[in-house]
Length: 248
Image 1 (cartoon, rainbow, N blue to C red):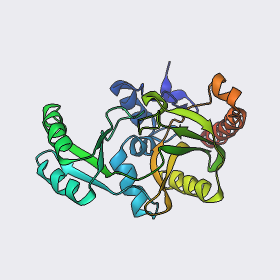
Image 2 (tube, rainbow, N blue to C red):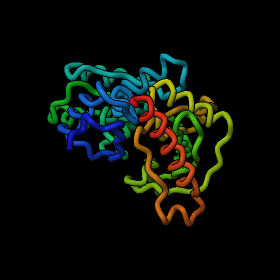
Image 3 (tube, rainbow, N blue to C red):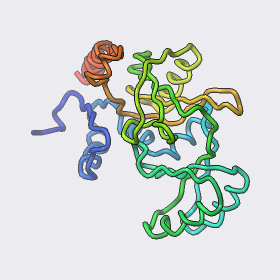
């Protein structure tokens, strides 16, 4: 199949892109319309670039630091300042590899592992005091699609379903919706799932992550009352039609 002859390229395979597919994605982005564009996809796949761009555009996020691989000693200084922090692979998803560091001893155990896997840099965020639940806001074409909550399993702190978290019905308020829409716009995404938590210490909502390939509700979740799939599909279809027409 001659991919360069397509009217539009739409990728929706979260966490399954091979380096070959991503390489072609970048090339095709130069000649045909995309959902999401390669530039937006690339930013949303990188936690540091996401946080950096959001912060520079006035969107609240967790405090963060990026350290060179040879500057692991800086992590101890950061730890002393923050007291608790979270290590995140910059390109991970689903909570995989995300590690909470509660004390210097835990950090000293993590550093040899980080050195062993030969990373180019280390990304850490200040641990945010929250109630172990979040809001997932789906946005398509600048419009609010739906909201649901996720909560960590008992005794755990990650809300990701792949890390043992569970989904529950949750209503979004205007502040949360506007925060999600603005974050999506800043990153240039056509489609996004924005994860928002409430910082109990600062008493404000912050954007924790932005996912460029947010999941649809499963049949089990639809039985709970998550009924946004049809609206999401309709908005995606309208978006495809409009973007494809631009080429013609």
